[in-house]
Length: 249
Image (cartoon, rainbow, N blue to C red):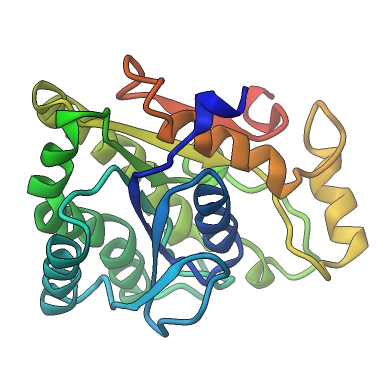
């Protein structure tokens, strides 16, 4: 089974790599044998990865990332775009600037990354099936159900709005890049609360799924590896939802 997910000799980039899920994504790709560039604004360390400081909302910074990859790897086999705006809010508290910031990080940055690495992804088709994975959210498919006493403490409206856009942008990219041999898919997580999360909140989130519980990071990791695997050569334009059945209701 491990051979199906083997990424030895492959180069991967994960944006938002010091975030809760981004760190999981970077680590699991490294464990599968990939040489992982862990990209974040801070350039913070991620075990087993090469850290790279890059603000993905900056044209110059992303261009520098592309040049670094050309010099240091010469190809790109897996691109995971997981950077996002992570804060709470509601319609009553959100501002137009919040929407612009969220769209810039989720959508415009995705375009910027694809432009800077397109040639590297195409080069990887020589002996592989390069994979671009855009990370969305169940809130790009459904609206949040109340789990907080204060609505302003919940998931903000602009987060789900841009995550819905990520799904469509990935579909568009899959159609354009498919003839070049580059696959593009979306990974849509459900509730994956981090360590130290309020047990009551975790229980409420879990109760909103048919499986009756929140997800564990390892359950998301296998989905990521499936999309990244060079054996998933016919999988593109898809949205893989890993949410315990939350969006089936």
